[in-house]
Each structure stands twice: as structure tokens, then as C-alpha cells.
Image 1 (cartoon, protein in one colour):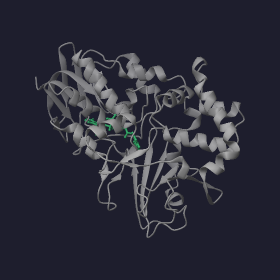
Image 2 (spheres, protein in one colour; image 1 turned 180 degrees about the vertical axis):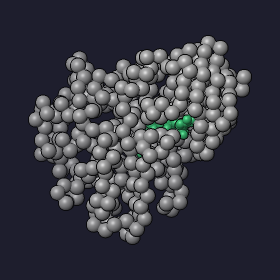
Image 3 (cartoon, rainbow, N blue to C red; image 1 turned 30 degrees about the vertical axis):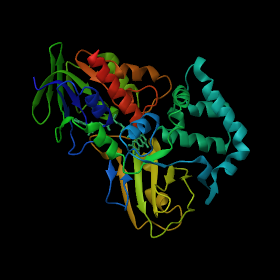
Image 4 (cartoon, helix red, strand yellow; image 1 turned 120 degrees about the vertical axis):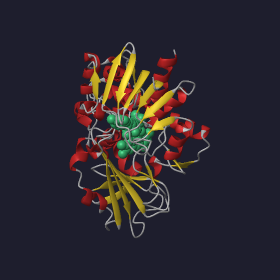
Length: 386
Ligand SMILES: Cc1cc2nc3c(=O)[nH]c(=O)nc-3n(C[C@H](O)[C@H](O)[C@H](O)COP(=O)(O)OP(=O)(O)OC[C@H]3O[C@@H](n4cnc5c(N)ncnc54)[C@H](O)[C@@H]3O)c2cc1C
């Protein structure tokens, strides 16, 4: 055998699993030449680290960053948020104020939805005859969740609100998110440029086809949901029906980030973010003439990048469109959950024989985050050591 455990994928989930299994002989197989998956820091676009993927740090990730000795910078603050409304940039809180009671009512309805059958946020908005402002705010929640309101499960929102992780998204890693990935990867054996094409599994162990054949007693599969959905990695025997149903039933819509550098800053220095109809824009550093646009879900397929980049008047001098759906090793942004699909995450996480499953999509608490990926990797490692 080449290892006790083979981990497929060197993203946050795979590295967290390998780190937790450090007493065993573990081998991580990674398709790309770099590690980190959807954490990808760019140091050439601006004079500071720019995040092409994950950027905002949540509870568990912030904890790990502290452990790694990394410093954080404050990020999104609603107090300093703006919204573009009919061609004007407005402060978000005074803009939302006339709809505050209605918006608070919506959040209360989400929090109280637990004993009712699940439905979409879109349905709830229609039932409450929500006005334009509440609907625009709901659209930003759907953008955060990489979907649209008509496919966003209210039960999912309730869980995320209860976990407090969404509201905890308030810092960035000053030295770059990849420093946290490097911390997770310390001492882990990783084979890069090893795209896995097939996994044979039985009670005797696993046989994994990549740049060559690898064998081990067990494997942790951390392939992104959309890679599993595309069927580009074969399993023999086929995965059980419950697992295939989970893979097909969850969603992974596109996630696009647009990095833009301008000749000068065209926005107020204290602007923390700007909500647009299509998504959201933010300056990753307050003093730099740089903006990032973030558009997810079905709308990302037809996003008008030209309109997005000129919303503040002048066009950027440099622009870099990062479309994660076009990347064969990701094929989308991050997973989302249509109404009634919560149990599918549990089914996706369920081990079968020597195969264990991790990755953000397997986490029920706050999927679609680096924290979720790390939590899932640790969970899969603990299944193995138990
Ligand atoms: C644009 C964008 C913005 C985001 N913003 C945030 C944010 O602000 N905060 C936050 O917490 N989260 C954010 N996320 C989500 C976060 O990035 C992910 O939830 C997390 O990084 C997923 O980690 P993972 O290990 O589950 O998957 P991945 O990071 O995708 O890792 C999977 C690994 O498997 C590898 N792989 C794929 N196919 C194969 C194969 N055939 N053989 C071998 N290896 C393979 C991939 O190359 C990859 O390295 C964002 C994501 C995107 C796309």
C-alpha cells in the first residue's frame, strides 16, 4: 500500500483532514500544481494580496488564523455599506430604514420557520408582499449563498443565522488567505499535478488512478460538488443511490469575482461595500484604488461585466475576471441548498466502505465557507481514527 489514507484534493477540507491524521501515513493527491483549491491569493494584480476565491474570514477560520499567528483586517461593516439605487450611491442604513420593520419581520419569519415545511425565500417574500427594498436585501442574501431567492431554502438561512457564521464574516487575512492554507499543509505529503480519474473501492481498501495508481486502506474524497456532479471521476463500484441522489439534488451555481484597478479611487474612503442589482462590490483595502465585484448564482452566467465595472463612472485600467465555473477543478462557486434538501448534505457526508467524504458541501452548519471545509475535513479524519 502507498499509504494508510489517500486524500483526494488539497483544498481546505483535504488539508484539514490530512493535518488531523498526521500520525498516520497520509498522501494527498491534488490535480492542480498549486494547493488551496478555492482559496487562491494573487500577489501580482495589486501591491497587496488579492483574493481570487475566499476572502472573508468566519468564526472557525478566524480561530485557526489566530492559532497560525496571522493578523486580520476589518472587512464588511453594514454601518459603512452603500447601495446603488437608480443611478445613485446611497448609505445603506438610511436607505433601508423605511423598510426596517418589514425586513426585521422577514428575519423573524426565517428564524421561526423550523416547525414548518421548508420553502424558498422567494415564496416567503411573496407571502409577506415584501417591498422593493426588502426584496433587494433578500437578493444579497441569495448572492452570499451562491443561488437566487427562488432556490434559497428558508431552513438553510435559519441554520446559518443560528450558527452566527454569516454575521461573523467580518475580517480579511492581511498577509493573504493562502498563508492559512500553507499553515494547514505543514508536514503534509502532497502530490501535485495528480488529477484523480477513477477510485476503485472495496472492504480491502482503495485503488486510486491519478498520474499513476495509488493504493491505501481508506480515502477521503474532497472533490467539489460540481466536480462530483460532472461525473469526471469514476467510482467502482458505483456510489450507492443515496449518495448519488445527494450529489444530484444539491446545487453549485457559478461564482464570479472581478478584480478591478482604477486610475484613482472613485468611491468614499469609508465605503465598506456597495450593493448592486447584480451582486456586490467592495474595496479590499480602504486606501487603494482597487475594487472586487462578487456575483454568484444563476445570474452570474449572464452578468454584464462591462456594466458592473463602470457603475461608478470611469472604467478600470486593469480588469481580471475570475470565473470559477470555467475552472475544470471547481466547476462552480460553492454549494447551495434548494428547499427541503438539508438531509442531502448529511447523505453526502456519510461514509461508504473505505470512502469518507469531506468538502464544504458536506457541512450542514455553514456550507460554502472555508470554515465549513475545515470542519468537514476534521470530521472525516475523526471518522477514520474512531
Ligand atoms: C469566488 C468565491 C468566493 C468565496 N468567498 C468566500 C469567503 O469570503 N469566505 C469563505 O469562508 N468562503 C468563501 N468561499 C468558499 C470557499 O472558498 C470554499 O467553501 C472552500 O474553499 C472549499 O474548500 P474545499 O476543500 O471543500 O474545496 P476546494 O477548495 O475546491 O478543494 C478541492 C480540491 O480538489 C482538487 N480537485 C478537483 N478535482 C480533482 C481531481 N480530479 N483529482 C484531484 N484533485 C482534484 C481541486 O483542485 C481542489 O484543490 C468562496 C468561494 C468562491 C468560489
